[in-house]
Length: 99
Image (cartoon, rainbow, N blue to C red):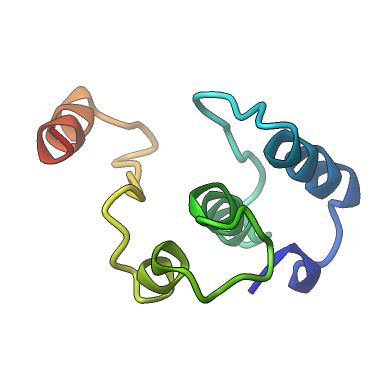
């Protein structure tokens, strides 16, 4: 999977590709919009590209991509909201697991 398989959002795809190419990745990104439009998929693909050892959109062969493909990458964590908010305890738990 890559951005090529995600329909639309061409400006956003290009912006995120440039961030990776120029090694100008910010500490956080928000993917906002109505439910069911592919925000999670978009965010996962961007994360996979950032974590890829080859910094490639089409690698899928390095250790990082293989771990990501198996939903087993130690540096990728999804925090789901509870009752439309993210609780401080969720962040604390995430930080504890990553120390």
